[in-house]
Length: 379
Image (cartoon, rainbow, N blue to C red; front, side, top):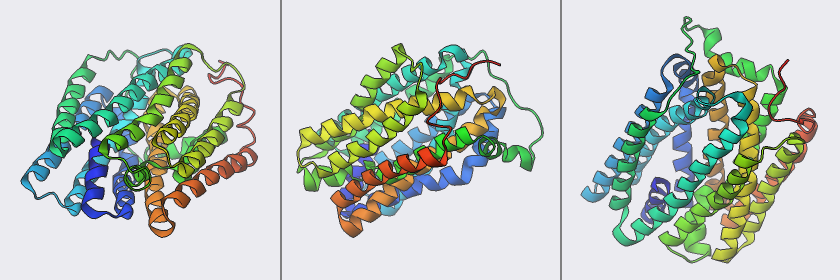
């Protein structure tokens, strides 16, 4: 809901697609700056308490957007400041949310648990943009921001009910070695480096989220409600695939499914970029979401099952830096290319780029296509 409202309001305010890309870049800055801190914090403190704090911060940001809009003082610059704060909260939120999963479920069912978690998340992503677009269209942005604030507060309360039984906290003194431990761990394991970097470059090239307001208004000639439907479409595909994966684990040929899903991601973006129909665009985005869900479950399962619990915070903070960079820099890339070449070439060329990255990574990391099982057999 928040992303739809901010994107639509900002584009209405400036009519400049580059500002949509800058919004993504602004959110990337705290992610980059806080990566080392996030990893240390996630491995040293109660992860539930940290998640509560991130939700409270986002609630305050949503309140600021509502008050600023109602008071008439919310400018382009103030929106960037508030989005920066939201980016700081997300810099902590995402790696901790991923790292807490093995604290809750045993490793043997971790891939199914990740898929089930993705199902819940995608359900929210489907409902959120649609509700956000509807409320924006009927009641204006203030109503959307107020509803977001209430939702964040509710999430902060509900996370307290999560039962954690496997958490182990790292109480060793903080050193430069421990600060860089996440990077070192990934660097020394080509499998993890290949998996994480594949997502970085594929999504950075084929990211399209920032341009959805442009497509909705200028190409598909729809309104905020249509934008909400476009934002929800990838989640519909992802939800469908996540439900399947929560019941049926990928038992073999994991590497094959990983590369096929990333190539399919790029192909779906090419189709979306050439579409001039709202319905067909929604189908292409749903396909993009479905194949991306396969990639997400495989990548997160490989990382979580090959990292010790006491290192998860630092490793997942690096992973979140890569995934966050892919999305946020992808938004900036899309906005900049759209301002230079137009929205359609920006999307189509990005999709082709993701396919080329897939082919390149199969040669650069030959062990990845040979991965058979997601969960590593015990020695």
